[in-house]
Length: 171
Image 1 (cartoon, rainbow, N blue to C red):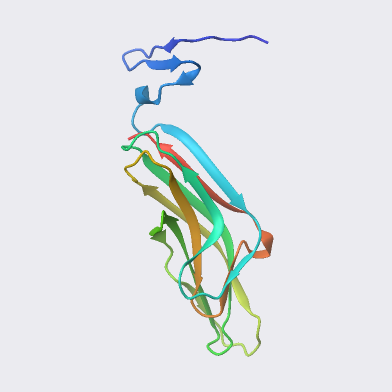
Image 2: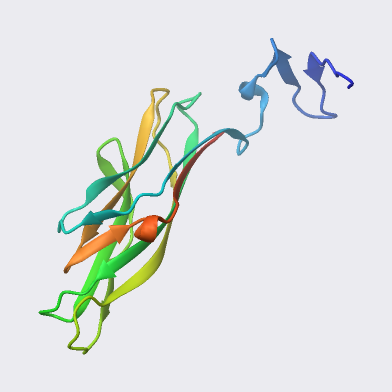
């Protein structure tokens, strides 16, 4: 196996990328570069009948290296809304929370039918993406939240895998 040792990478007509003690100096990277990626997964069904947004166990923390960095947050969850038998409707809502404040949420995902049977439901793949600007170098925590609007909502339905990804983008 070969080993390549490098102290500096010189870009023709651009900025030098400096490697110190085996670490790339992110200050020398251009705006828009991905500086770090953190991800979390969860796969145990969570049921809620709350009419207000509540947190699920899908959460992660990222510590930006610069206050000028943006954080691209991406959420992917499979969810199920159960129908309220009295209204024949089902609805749910999902959100991404940053340190106690919702930064993006879906509209209420609603359906209605005229069936007289109970136990009917509808499944939704939920995808939320947001470019956040926390303006800090302290740890930032992002959490998936959901709420029921009629009967109940099930996130990570049938124990499906949910994913939350945070990418620090150089500002």
